[in-house]
Length: 131
Image 1 (cartoon, rainbow, N blue to C red):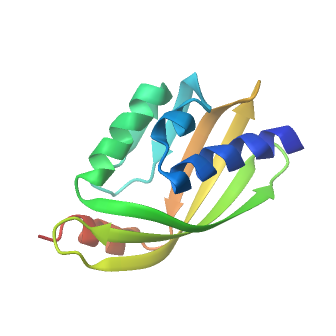
Image 2: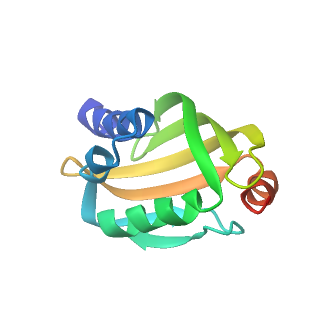
Image 3: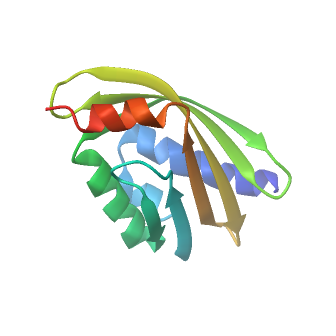
């Protein structure tokens, strides 16, 4: 991946940090495939900006996600993002700091692939279901 591709991912993540979902969505190609980690109540395969917005809606039903830091690594044909995040239950208010690793593929200045992996998916899912 090029420095320009790395910049696209940085701008995507930075938009989330700012809370600007519209800006983040503008970085996704219409045919982008977003694979959210299996085993989560918000798992699934989502397509394009509308699909990604649906993922955020599903996730937000149980947790608020905050990105605390982001390290981008050029993985050759992909960009790897190591995110330190804090998830807070919308039901109980309890918070969980954890790491999420995302693998991005960029084509023609847009994100076309995003694959997410959680360090402790069981703990995030339990938090999601707290009342």
